[in-house]
Image (cartoon, rainbow, N blue to C red):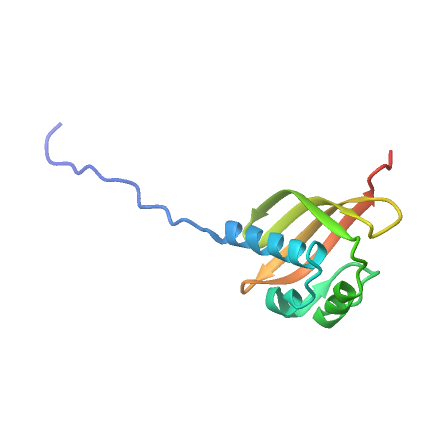
Length: 129
């Protein structure tokens, strides 16, 4: 082997902290609304054109804010597993006193511009077999 060669390092990887920030945003939203019943958090955390895919909850921030303001003090959300990739966050948890039986729910959020832009959920009574 003749000649010169150079030892190089791989380019520094750019760390994308977006999933961590988005997970923190979703956790803050779920605990603000469904533990502390802080309806004012809707304006701070949700995009103005927020899209709700639950047919039982009207569209938009105003409807969500009204829903939270009218919640029974007994409603309580217990967060569990939370995962994120890119602009999507999934959170799994339990809700008590929303319905007759405690529910296990999985919520999927899309984040845009640091705000919650879209939401859909799946849920079932906790004791469903």
